[in-house]
Image 1 (cartoon, rainbow, N blue to C red):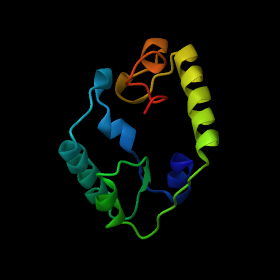
Image 2: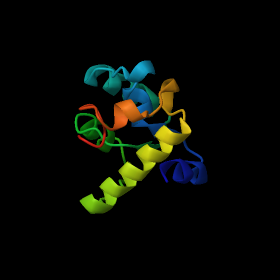
Image 3: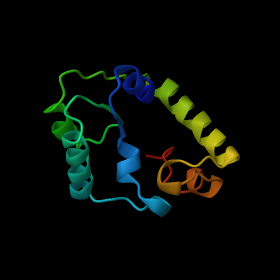
Image 4: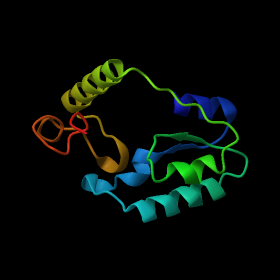
Length: 117
């Protein structure tokens, strides 16, 4: 949805997961993530749409935003969508950001799974 809104407004779409997760799922530090987000915001003086939410980055983003849209789904609905999306991505071996892919091994029996967090 964020990508479509950005396209409609003619502004950059900034996906936080693409910044946070490097190749092979290596996570950048919060400081490095914040630095990159600040750089992207500086490069987009006419506006931007951010997709994602990281608590430690949120104040940085909200301080520069003129509008915030928060979509808070009920937990059961959100979890069901994440579950279905993870199965689809694992089954189809979809390439996500920075060449990463969801996999059965990482998605289900792992403590690192988004389904466990």
